[in-house]
Length: 70
Image 1 (tube, rainbow, N blue to C red):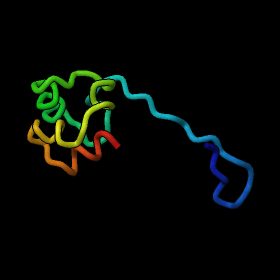
Image 2 (spheres, helix red, strand yellow):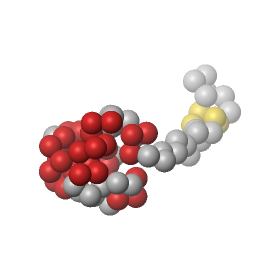
Image 3 (tube, rainbow, N blue to C red):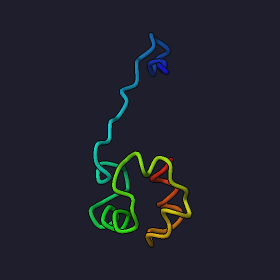
């Protein structure tokens, strides 16, 4: 959804980010990505359908798990 410019001007389209690898996600580094792969989450699509509890099982904590799937 376009947002208004900071001065109330014309709508400015927001650029959508595309993530191709797990490591591309915010708050997911190489170590976290490896932990996720070890429990079966190897794609962005698999993370998109995961629950916080499933991701937390990788030992990354519930807050980080929630951030990843948000």
